[in-house]
Image 1 (cartoon, rainbow, N blue to C red):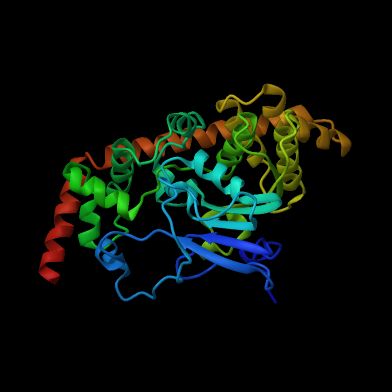
Image 2: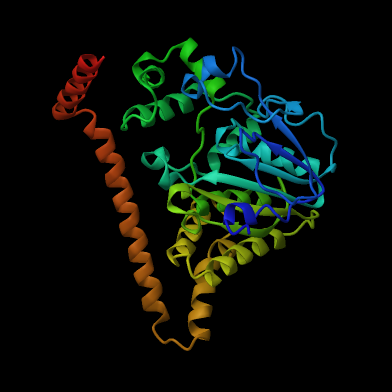
Length: 359
């Protein structure tokens, strides 16, 4: 019996389905679905570019060799799919708004898009600043098709200044002091986390994109990291349904209302997520009447339950959010200063010497 939220969310995807970047473990969809796979070939082959994967099982054989950044999905006609799955893909692309718009193009109205994204607060992206909507919007308007050097450098600095997560050879590739044209090209082949989002920040991106007219979605279902077993709790997912362009602001408002209602009825979800969502939408310049829906929804629920301290409870959550943001800032500052300290350099040197002694 399937009980994992990661598997359950995909079971409603049926019909003609495409999974982009399936790796070696395709996502679970309806048993009756007709699934095809698309992935990107890498110049030089997998083992040369990813020595940490040598000896690992090969990925699923793809039906299409694609580069989302430069060409999208040209092999597929508009409105030809009933479902599309992109797990741990969207954070890697140079132009995420263009890619999501391309996903929308190939889906029929009523078709479903499953986006699974790493939660920046639970991965090596925790030390990085979140990506505001203004960044991918500028790339979208400029027609960007390649990951820029500034993004690669920022990612390498974040990765290199953390406890090692790669073998020694691979770790050296991320040394920001050694980045040159060849290294930039290597990281484009390997791909990086170009952008970093929390669930609320990514939901805000989707709302902002709808407000810009880039796409039109209804929120079908979602899960957060806390719904997964601890060993897998690094991601979130949204199952979206393509809807017709109604030419109004009702679609983004409905999306926000649905997101809030799903979060509020879920006993596992902390109410602080509501204010994080509101904060992200305000930051991204979404219409105030839509952006403040989370706090309005919380107040309405509180009053409906007969509680009299609704304003105080909302204020306490606001204080908790301020404290969370202060802690994040301190953590980033510590991460920056730690690797400049004399003690760290001594410890790092001792580690290298120990490694040489051990062979």
